[in-house]
Image (cartoon, rainbow over all chains, first blue to last red; front, side):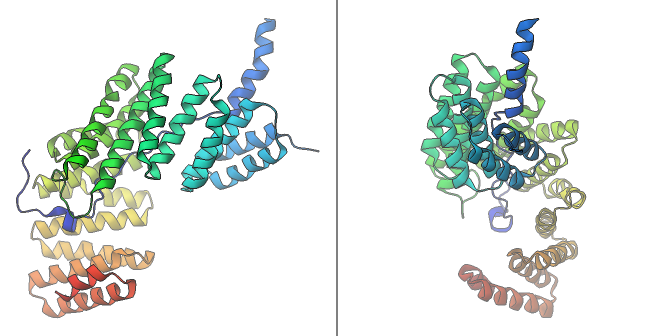
Length: 46
Length: 342
């Protein structure tokens, strides 16, 4: 690709190769588990 | 009245959800002290403790708890194992242990494929991309220009770009937030590979999605990354337009980011040979750097010295050059000291 010849940009732009997007961490929810635990018997009674 | 492990864990979870990770950690640790025989609850506590420490940048602790979680879930609970592997992979990546991170990402991906979990597959591929991107950057960064890295680096970055092919899955799922993240990191990968037009195209997509969500931080990131790509394309005026992050950074009340935006704008106007405006932005950068007691102070003085030299203001140029030298001596920056002496 084209690139300007007169730019030594890493010398003056201290961009660290771009700002990254956040990591996606997996969630194990206690409240969801709790709800499931309590709703399970209710649902099975219906 | 005695508080149960579950109650403490629920409070820890609530605190982490609102971003108070420090308090969340206290509740989760108290929950562990009380103890439970329910392995699912214990796994969730370990996992969330790991995530809380991750967000607090205490990666050694994050690693410890994600390891505990994985040990607990390895037998029988495939979804739990996939999640633990994903989190462990992300943590190992940040710690620079890329080979181990890759093993975890692969396990995450394998399980997601086995149970036909498309969301899990897309997330595992995104994590994979992030690991290869970080690996590429870690091998050789300083000194070289994007696109001119050694083969090993280009190979890792090429793999990252391949894994960001998870875009096809997240498009199919209609998950715009995940598309935004992937476009952002794909843009950064193309930037390092020297594919600046492709980088621009990815970051433009990222910007569009950030605006859809009203995500100001992502918007600012996209503008900044677009500015950097346009600099390498030699389109300095367009770059300056994109460094409008200055305004966004002020709204976000992030002084360090505002300083970075001022510095980028100062450099862009230097490239445009508009030294008066360059000085204006470098001075703004200097003031914020001084307030923050930031290492950028030396850089600001060096830039100001150069801009004043270009304008023939020799006294001012000398003043900033001396100040730069003084800061380099104070901070023990040997290479900066050599530059200052020149």
